[in-house]
Image (cartoon, rainbow, N blue to C red; front, side, top):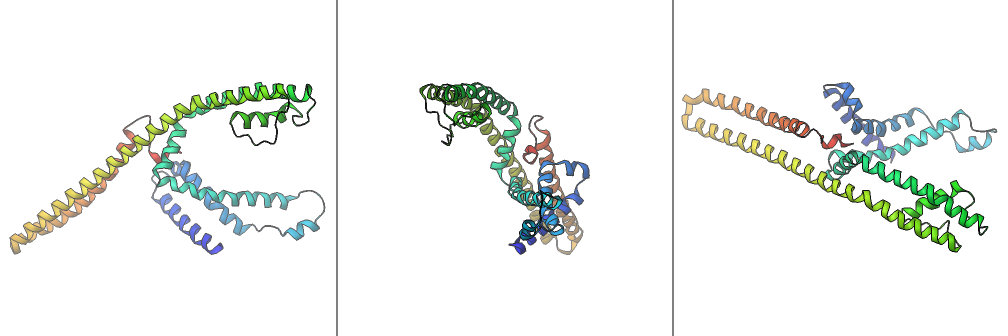
Length: 283
C-alpha cells in the first residue's frame, strides 16, 4: 500500500507542479478551490514522511497528560484522513460531480433557509419533549434540553436511531408533531434544489455537447483542407512543390486554428453566462 500510495502521490505531484508552472497567474491558481483540494490531498503524504508517529508502547510508559507529541500525532492522523480528498479530483472529469457542485453553489439561499427552519423547529420541540418526558413522567432519557436537541434533529430529519424514545402520551404527541413538521420543512426547499439540479445538469450537458461539436467541426475542416492540399500537390507534380510547402504550413495553421477554437470555446463557456461559471469553478 505504501508503494502504491507513493506512485500515486508522485504522479499527482508532477501533474500539480506542471499545472502550476503553466498557469498564467500563480496567485489565481493557488486560490482555485480544486487546486486547494489537490494540495490538501497531497501534503499529508509528505508530512507523514517527515514526522513519524510515536510508538504506542512509549505512550503507555509516559506519565502525565497529553504532551506535545500526542497533539502532533493527532494532527498527523487528521492529515492522513484528508487523503479521502483524492476522490474530489474526479470532479474535473465527472459531469455528475460538476452538476452537484454547481447546484450547491447556486442553492446556497435554499440551504440557508432549510437550516434556519430546522434550527427553529429543533429549538421549539426540544423543550416540549423535555417537559413532557422529564418533568411530567420522570423519565431519564431526556435529561436536559440540549440533550433533547439530538432527538429533535434525528426525528425531524426522519432518521430515527431509536436511542432516545418518548414513552409517555404527551411525549409521543410532541414526537408526532415534530416528525410531521420535519417532513414539511425538508420538502419545501428540496423541491427548489431538485429543480436547480435538473437545470444545472441540462446546462452543463448542452455546454459540453456544444464544445464537442465545435471541436469535431474544426477537426473535420482541418482534415478536409489537408486532403485537398495533398490532392493538389499530387496532381501538380514537381511544379507544385511550393504549394506543397504551403500545404504543410496551412496544415500547421489548421492545427493552430483547432487549438484556437478550443480555447475560444472555453472562453465562451466562461463568458457566455454571467450567472454561471465553468463547471470546474462550481466548487
